Length: 256
Image (cartoon, rainbow, N blue to C red; front, top):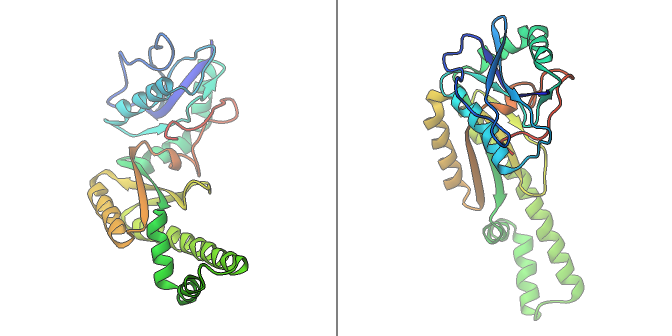
C-alpha cells in the first residue's frame, strides 16, 4: 500500500503522535517512520485521494498538532510515496538538507498576507493624486458626460493609474512587513490580488509582526488585507513548498 506523508521532523521531536488520525474515510492512523536523526509523519494512503475540505483539514490538523511542540517541515497535500521504505530512503538521502531546514525553521511560523484594492477607495485615491484625471473628469462632467472618445480616454487613464497604484501598493506591503520577519517568499501572481506574500516569523515576534500589519492597514485604507496564520512554514521548506525527491508525488499545499 502507498504511504501518505504529512511532514518531516527530528526523531527526537517531543510530540510525535501516538493515537493521531489522519486523512481517509475512515481516518488512517498516523505513524512515525524514522531514519537516523529524522522522522516522517505518515499514514496509509487512500486508494483515491481528493482535495476535499475534510481531507485538507485532516492534513493540516496532523501538522498543527505535531508542530505545537516542535518544528515540522510540512509536505504538500497529496504527497504520496510507493511505500514506507521509499520514505525512509529519501530521509537518508536528503538528511543534511532536512536537518538544516529544521534548524533554520525551529521556533518560526508562516503568515501569508494577500492584498486587494477596495475599489471605491482606490478610485478616490487615484482622483486625489492625479490632477490630469481630475481635470478630465470635471471637463466631462461639465460637457454632460463627454464624448465617447473622451470617456474612453478617461477610462484608460484611470485604469493605468490603478495599475500603477497596484504595483506601488504591492511593494509597500512587502517593504512594510519584511522588517518584522526573518524571511519573505513572494507567491505567484494572480488577478485575484495585487500582493501575495508569505512571511517567516519567529513565534516570539508574532505580536510585532501583527502590529506592523495594523500599521499597514491604517496607512493604506484603500487596501483590503487578508492575513492567514500562524501556519506551518510551507513556503520555506525549500525555495517553495517541498516534496521529498521525485519518488513522492503531491498536489496543492494544504494552506491554499
